[in-house]
Image (cartoon, rainbow, N blue to C red; front, side, top):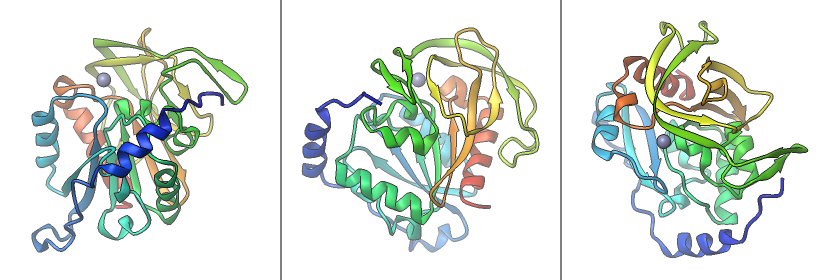
Length: 251
Ligand SMILES: [Zn+2]
């Protein structure tokens, strides 16, 4: 693809200067047995209080906040010993080439990945990231696998019908078709080899809303839903996210 732009160098310098803001706290005995989640954010605003409250309310999850790009050095082999799943809600512009290599090496070792909503627009100049999550929100026109893509579109506060495309999958088990008030995305890239779990027929959204795939030894879920607290208040969304974290952790 031809999306390469030279902001990567600047971002690399910024990332090198900034110190990681969090450290692993795997020794906490009260959290034994819980799924250990590293929760990334940064590069896109969101309603922080209700977002973190949603994770606070998950009885089987404990999480550490990892703002990006400051904490990008955490994403390297060894993290899989302290964490079971990385939930990525960041839309970071980029990380350094060394950090990209370390992130790929980590995923080849194996750690769960749940990529949420605008995370599809993260790492816009790093072609490998679309292979990791199986999709890409296009921020500037580019070519992928010989096909031209224009800039993707979005629309806030839409009511969307969601169809469960695979009712047998552990992530969608017990979830019926539902409606959600959320943001729509249109004209994004979806990799042909993903297994689609959720679909919609909303005219302002492409059909694929959630999918799973493998990357290296890592299980990857991409879930497009989840723009703001109106979506996070939807019990079907929370159930899919929770079961998605369980699945990515291998439970
Ligand atoms: Zn959004």
